[in-house]
Image 1: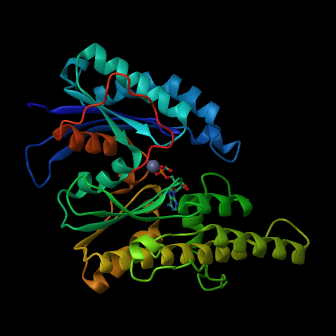
Image 2 (image 1 turned 90 degrees about the vertical axis):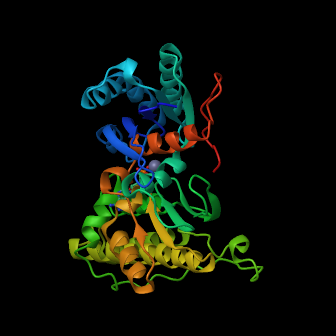
Image 3 (image 1 turned 120 degrees about the vertical axis):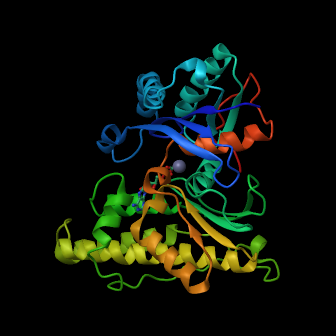
Length: 356
Ligand code: KG4
Ligand code: ZN
């Protein structure tokens, strides 16, 4: 196939995104980002302290045409130059997903071009290959975002074996909830990241989280690679409430907020690094990858790199613009599927709880 330009659309949550990624013909660096546009809805949802699904889908409807036109203009291409399309089918908010899926189906049909349906997390995983080209395999990849904390084993490019996941809150969700209870605003992850850098990570010792381990011979099945963050979130909540009661006011001193943020982040990052490298060791991985919105976290990036250096395993993390939600990663995962001839059916529908 003489495919050159793939246009991808991502509307799974609160970012309307479109990107054009080219196939290069170079096996080591098969894809190149030609344009990538993200229209953020943060300002709309901030007022409510979290994403309001109905507001999100309405804003996608308003933004989608302009975002796609901008992606075409930035790439210096017009519609007929597009050889194929990809769209996020799920998981996510169904009303949001439907905007992207409907738009992509209509555009692909009217252009007479193939359409591929992409899993949002496959997009996050492929952002690593998009940014770094081929990496050594097998690789263990941590996908850590607002909705997911999953570990995958990649033995062959484009094949994802789930090794573990969070049993309750996703790591990004824990960041957002802790930020909210500290009165820091939305989205919490980047704010906690910034404040934590100035706090004392050892100021507070949180109680440990133990996951039950019924079958020690099969750690990948018995939950050794699973995560849990709701206990930590509750511990932070109790601590903050106790301090508020002791001080007789809701607002804690800034220095104390920074210490809570740093201590919380220390525990989250420690857990993510430990589990990821335990899985890598168990599976004889030759590389570790980290993707998803929380992979933008400065402390997580540096701790992953430090551990990788200590155990001589290369660590691959996409650049910040490819860490948080974007459509270039969906294009990469789409190109991977297109190469295998996996096209979306004409009756493609959004799937809010699509599994990977
Ligand atoms: O992948 P993403 O953009 O959207 C989902 O698929 O969920 O991830 C968003 C999540 C949010 O929870 C946000 O707070 C978190 O990623 N996040 C961060 C940072 N930047 C974004 N968490 C910690 N530190 C950051 N710098
Ligand atoms: Zn995401």
